[in-house]
Amino acid sequence: MGQAQTLMACEVTYAGHTQTVVAHPVADPYPVPAVDIAGRFRFKPIVVGDDRRIRRVLIYVYLETDAQPVLIQQAKYLPPFPAADASGNIAITGQQYLYAGALERELIYQCHLKGVAP
Image (cartoon, rainbow, N blue to C red; front, side, top):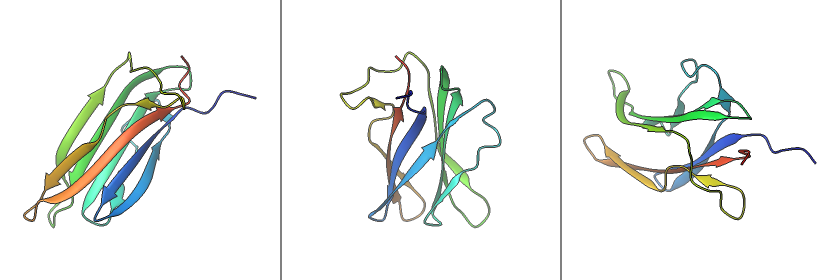
């Protein structure tokens, strides 16, 4: 049985609906697209590195506006990462709560690395 593929899975919740956004390691973070979240937010998780070594994790969250997306959170996580739990997942962000826009819309997310070699 081979080693699991390295990836980051983020559970993103808006308006009671949760979706999983997956990010695989990339060498160049710039072309990674943001994922639309119900037309209200854009969520962009990035894992820079490869299956052998994660160099950094980046997360960008944007509020959709009529003019253009507005950055409301930028986060960077660098190794060493926390220890994996019993299932082999590494909690990167913890549960995050973001509020933005005139109505203070709430976006909740948390991200875990999976398949990272010890």
